[in-house]
Length: 87
Image (cartoon, rainbow, N blue to C red; front, side, top):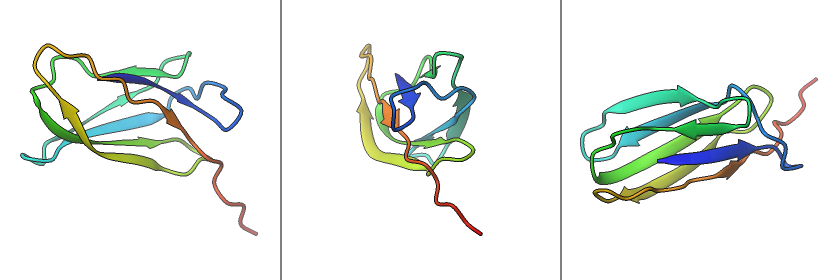
């Protein structure tokens, strides 16, 4: 599973946290994006997953029911909206 995380202007978001959770087992793992806003999870067991992307200053994005099949590469990109401004 891999993907790119960008802001509303399509600029890469570095050091964003991506959480991958197996919906059958509840087991979760995290990774962070590189300088190009790319993340990767290696050697994932086939199954159905939830993918969550978070970054400081941005709203959290979530994709549920991402299906990973054996020997398949799945791409899940995110475009994060700016977080609301508080006073």
